[in-house]
Image (cartoon, rainbow, N blue to C red):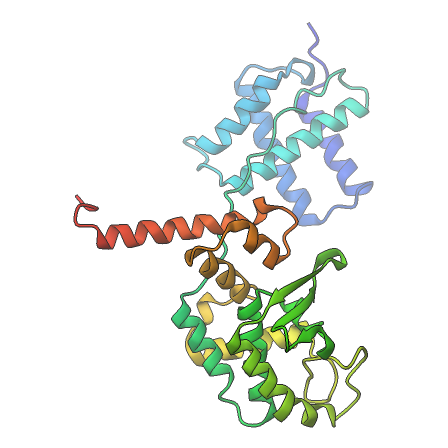
Length: 313
């Protein structure tokens, strides 16, 4: 029978390896130590005497125990259980590479996958309130802020894509904009009448005043400028969104991607094909876009529950 080295001794060696050779953070080491101590206790209770006796079933059983909890431990969340499994997998990989065992019995035990978080979209009326609140500032800033938020919602652009726009990227005749997405991949996206009108008003009445404060950039000039005449930064654009949200009373619901998520969700709610939305968002895979369909299904359930006479018992 291959009992192998004591689990506690291997755990100590592994933690020393992570501390000295890998240089992991103190908090990470503390989490790993806590997870692996619980693993060792689980194995001892299961009658396992050494590392060589551990089987894949033992590792899988430990994962199940983490999720179920016991008298001494509450059930772990998906994220915490996944971290513990990563620690255990690292321990067994370390033991294999160190020649302490001949097989990595944890290699096929996968950490649990966290539940996919649904994108946060806000209702159309909240979008309108947000955009309206951006335009209340006097002077060029109010026109710029409104144009920025109208464009974000009207095209589904990421904030980084919007602040990277040049004036020449906007084709007002074709009512379209050229966006440079991740990996430099470009896409052409239609611009709705509200966004187009807001951007045109900004270009005529606000941008010249902002540009007079400094150099505006290259390729025909950066579209969105700060008060010093330079390119508006992503951080400043996020601050504009946050300030508008505060004025509209929507702070708890707003993130940098809120208008992008709302753009996608509202298109799908309106009957748009998921592959069209994929192209508009610049997603490489339709699978990425399909997460928005979960939002619209929830909306359908809500409408059904409140509208159908026999929806509720």
